[in-house]
Image (cartoon, rainbow, N blue to C red; front, side):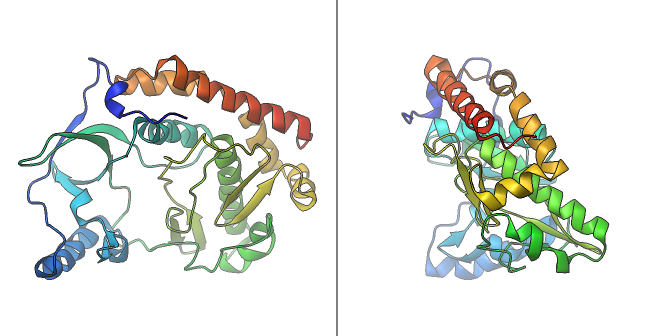
Length: 296
């Protein structure tokens, strides 16, 4: 897919949220203490783990956090319009499949002495006092096929009901990511929330690397793999009600509805080429699912 600037898609109807950057900390040894102090404050007020805000200059999101009307927001820039629109499409797709998600909105970042920049902004979804962890924290990474559901998570849940809720979270995530060919569902962008009865999948984010894979048979994420023609996957999916319900929603999904919502709410025009790209991807994915006979 050709990568164009987001400015190519913005119309006069667009009304991006204005973000005033305020003081921008340059990456330098002199600012190291300030970075840690700001990261501590942001973590305390947002509930986001400090290590996800600042560890060192390789993991540094201090300047991405902005306080607007006494609420914390995360500003995210994208290198091209396709990636940014994927983020907006991803929100609609996650909601369609019944999964919590951050809510991205078009934003304009104003930085002193620099040209305004178009990106995305999302209100903080974390709750101070709640414990948030990753797949790595629970040692839930690199399972084969769907083994994480069968063997990996059961011991983390206090009750059978809690296990079922967490398992269904993961099943919906596999189908949701298969629909959009999500290529970047790593341990860092699967956020889990610890409850008194066990972990639950929390708000999803990071959808930029979507609808750009040539493989219509399998999706991989940090939990494992969902493959249309893998024997172990097929047997499990064919016998599981949640997978079947999610796959039926998959077949009923309408990419045109997602396109219209994103265009109307953000004042953008994707143009014929990008719209056709999304439609062809959805058509090929639905054909692959139908041909696989993975639906009962």
